[in-house]
Image (cartoon, rainbow, N blue to C red; front, side):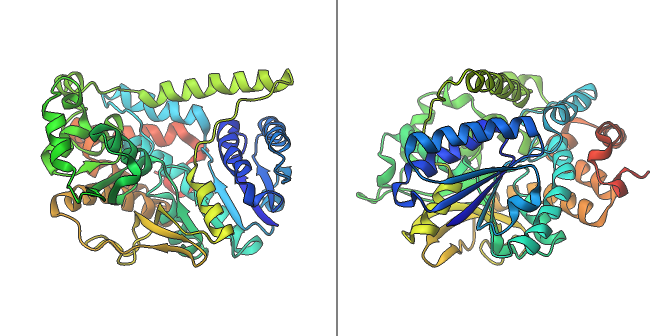
Length: 437
């Protein structure tokens, strides 16, 4: 039986989504062992209840167990699906509340910006520890990582641990969801469209957008739709980036606003592009409310509603276990996949997944204007990863200084003071060498 370990399984909604997919794959029934791991014993117990319910209702025949110990959860694992959030909601509040006092606006703050930097400082050390434990307990295991900051976490693992880069793939919905959005917008069935997309997680661009049957480039149709809707699509950040740079970005408008210096620092731009400042806090509060509903339902013995979500981790496991090839997007070590970016950078590209394992596809060159945008993001990512691996507070400050939105909003002294306040506020969640002044 293949062993699948879900790390951070106490996020019951996420665990339920993964298991709903796996339970729907009848060809895998009876062949999987599911190990749930979380450091929160109460949440882990609820995750086990939910998992058992799903497996029983679907007659999947999977073995399922709960583990507070990382060691027993990791032992012999073939796949490890990671969805941890180091520091949880309280740390997220700090990431927003401290910068707000300095006049710095953020929207999602989990992959770039000062919030993304702080999340990277908290998360990368824990992931390096996990990766080293994988080397000892499941050396052939494949880590499928959902945890943000995605472009930082895998890069941090292969910079600071002994785990080979080939054992780590980052998975994210943004490319998939953008492809679906574009297909709906131009009114062409998605299965009929050829897409070619690449870049960094949350900052990829769609370079090929073509009707497979007719050969029509669908970008002119998209441009016409945008121009005909100036008060709708025309007032979205990602659409403005498409208009100015020629290719459609894969992240939401709220999040895209943080990757560039032109929007969040200006009141009129926030209003014009309808940017939802502090959006991630609202989503986090909704998730906490949803958790309370799930907890009450499980306490009452109610059956949870189940919807398949076609999670990428589930699709990777299905393709690898059955040998039926699928083209999926993932975040891997560059090693020449995209020219003009560092070899050790974590890039997002299409890949063939199946009988021969995981094979990232070489993309080659990308347009210079999009490469330039990728490089501005890369600066923040690389400096943050190096700050953790080298234990350097100075590199943290430098990452904040080159961050596009932060630099567009604050002076040098204010940025330095804000970094100091954030490091102090997060306390022991930040690596000790970085906490030293």
